[in-house]
Image (cartoon, rainbow, N blue to C red; front, side, top):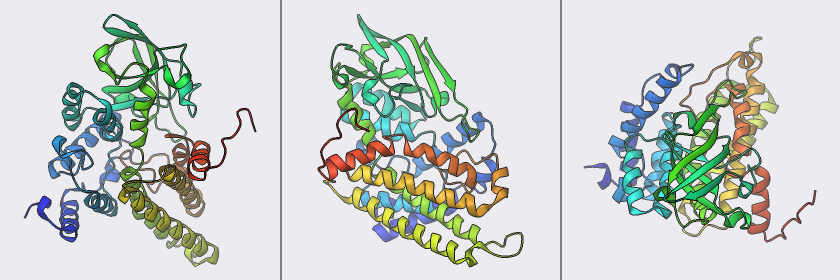
Length: 398
């Protein structure tokens, strides 16, 4: 019986058996401190392993290699998390942001060019944020000037995750400087090998250089690489940003529970220098109980979000805000309980998620998640205005 013909319990057993035989043994140790080329090779090989099993892009339409029902997708991500499978760090933007944008707003030619290439390993980066246009994305200043059958692009992007390894970029640029902010933006697919594109990695507090700056100096993009009508990029961008919700949040929540919390409990159960275990302290027990309760709530919210055909206007913001701040609280507690030894850990496995067991590095890295896809302050505004119906905060108020 094939995986496609199995009922849900049998499908779970099928995924479990696959995980036991295909997840690389000792991958965390092997991926700690490796050069970039080894990280990229490992990520691409793991993606193809998942692809051969039908697990790489289950959320895509069947026509393009997906078509897995939502209930099965939930089971798949639960089991991958439970068996500590590597995360698709390098392909994340490709299979979620790029694919959702192409499927929602791309032409048939654009889909046929890029979706099979993504399955073959094409890597994408998101070129949205700028030095003066982060949370206020509509304030971006990168310009795209039409010249014949092309656009000439000039400007700068920042916090571009994985840009150093990317083949293509999802790029927002201003095509009408006189239009209101959201109405003068167009959306482009940009080949990262284009002359005039300069990528500069940013060294982070964790020692990694996952984020990058992208400088654009008279970079020429063919008009056929524009997605959607000219000056309609803001609407198209909402399809991209929507890919950060739903099933991706369910996967992250499962990893936070199966990896992060499980390791935290194990950490608290180990004897310290004096022989005492942190878990014997009533205050530690209380913190663990609170975190477990919060995780249960997060998982329930994620499950409801992916199962609901008509989610509320602020549901995705609630889940994103809850996850990012719970991640902070959990890794903060892990750094506190782990003691001084955790401060001497300078490396973490590059193919892990935001919870690797290197508690201090994980806590430092957790702050990243309160910013991308809309900062916590932006999420609270969305929840208040769209979810609770509160009046918009007046501009310039403090």
